[in-house]
Image 1 (spheres, rainbow, N blue to C red):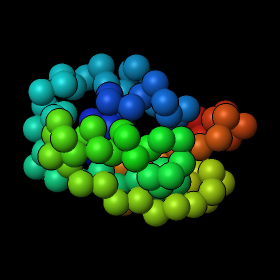
Image 2 (tube, helix red, strand yellow):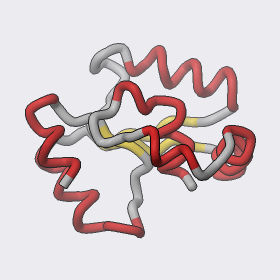
Image 3 (cartoon, rainbow, N blue to C red):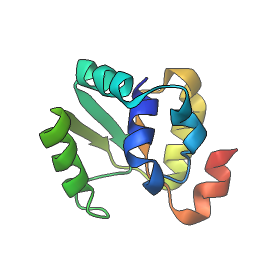
Image 4 (cartoon, one colour):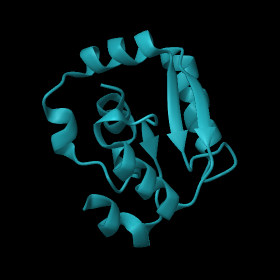
Length: 105
């Protein structure tokens, strides 16, 4: 549920996200699940990178979500999501454009 909510909110900025991910769940359901969890756990998306700070502040203001990030490279992010598969500890990651095709696989 965490991945679906964040993909819906930030999908246009994440190479791995597709419209199909959000198609099966309505926004209210996603919002409720995210609020219940209370936090966004990201990888490679620190406050000082690509103005993510503004995004995290907006999510905190609108949905009451805290932000926790583990800074890592695109390759490290892809390896982490691949290793964790359906038990991902992170909700979202931001990989460089060159890593997009690799991330989709």
